[in-house]
Length: 105
Image (cartoon, rainbow, N blue to C red; front, side, top):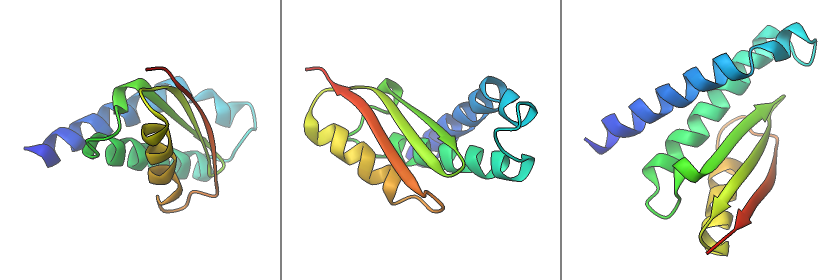
């Protein structure tokens, strides 16, 4: 059940990314191949966050451009912010992580 929920969440996150950032290829910010890779990275990061009980995945936004993951949103503690960054850094094909999560108790 937990795996199915994480997969469903990842699918929704992936669809959101495809519709929200589809213009980056048209604006020559990245190639179609790297866009597909970035969408996969974003989906993988969100899925890992959904599985982690210490991270509120719905409060954290994940965007990827050319292998660089941008985290934003809100965390309840510094530990949660650090865990979200760790999850992103340990995801395959991530080159860099920019953590802009704000800690708000």
